[in-house]
Amino acid sequence: MIVTLKKSCTEEQLKDLVHWVESQGLEAQVTRGNFKTIVALVGDTASLDTTLLSRLDYIASVTRIQEPYKKANRKFHQEDTVIELNNHLKIGGKNFVVMAGPCSVESEEQICTVAKRVKAAGATVLRGGAFKPRTSPYAFQGMGAEGISLLLKAKQLTGLPIVSEIMDISKLDLFADVDIIQVGARNMQNFELLKELGHCDKPILLKRGLSNTLQELLMSAEYIMAGGNERVILCERGIRTFETYTRNTLDISAIPALKELTHLPVIVDPSHASGISRLVPPLAMAATAAGADGLIVEVHNDPAKALCDGPQSLTPDEFDSLMGKVRSLLPLTQKVMEG
Image 1 (tube, one colour):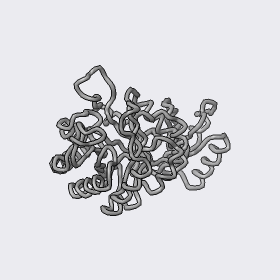
Image 2 (image 1 turned 180 degrees about the vertical axis):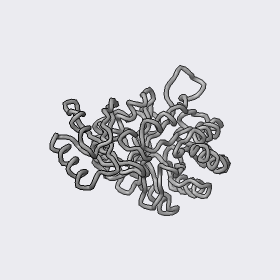
Image 3 (image 1 turned 90 degrees about the vertical axis):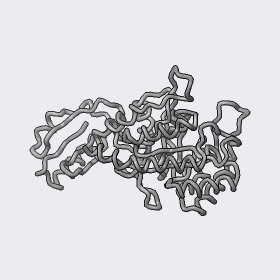
C-alpha cells in the first residue's frame, strides 16, 4: 500500500503516521521525492481500512499495490536507486558503468594484464570468476580462494573495484574485500543464499535465471532487500528459448520493462546472451540504446586458450573498439531517454 502525502503535511503528522503504521505490525518506508512524499506500507495490509487513512487531511491518496515485490517496486520508490562504491563509483541513475574481465581467473599474469587493458579502455569495474558453476563436472571449476587473491592483486595494481561470483555462503568470508558480489543465473532462486546476502553490506549483482520471468527476478531481489541489503543490481544475461544459433537469447525488452517495474539499476551481459564474441558488440550497443545502466563484458588476453568461455570473450583490442562505440552512443541515448 502507498500513502501519498499532501505538501501541507508537517513532520509531526508524518511521525504520527509512521508510528501508527508500525503499531499495526507493518513497516513504513518514507520516500521524499522532488515533488511529493510517499509512505510505503510493507507487510500484510489486507485488513487496513483505506477510507480511514483517506480521511486524514494531510493524506492526498491511498493506493493498494498488487505486485508481491514491495521493496524493489518503483511504485514504492519512484526515483532511480544509485549505488555508490567505496571509490565513489556510482551505478544507476544517469551513471553508466562497464564491468569487464575474464570469465575465470587463470593466473596472476592473465588477470593483471586484462585488468590494465580494460581500465585503459574505460572499464570502471574488473570482473573475474574465482568459483565457476559449470554444467560439466569435468570442466574447469575456477581457482577458488587463490582466484580471489589474484583479483585483489589486480585491484591493487589498477585501482579498479572487483566483482566476482559466490556459489556457497560458507565462502562469504573470502569476499570480504570484493566490492560487488555476483549471484549467477543458476543461483537466482537459491533463496537461502539470497537471504544470507541480505544481511551483508555489499552491493549484489543478481543475474536473471535462464528461464525466469521478470517477476521472479524481482522476487529474488526482494529476498535480498527484505534482509536489509537494498544495494541490488539486476543483470539481464539472456534467457533460454527455442533458438540454438546463440547460447541464449538476449531479452532487450527486459531493460525498459524493468525500468518501469523497479528502481534498481539494470545492466546487461551480452557475452553470455550470445556466446559468440562477434555478436557481443552489436548486442552491447543495443542494450546501451535501450537504456541499460551498464554492461558486463567478458575480455580475455588470449580467448583461444581460455579455460572458460573463450568463444564469447573479446580480446583487449576488440573491447577497446567496443568502448569507443559505446562512448559515442551514450550521449545520444541519454538525450533520447530524457525526452
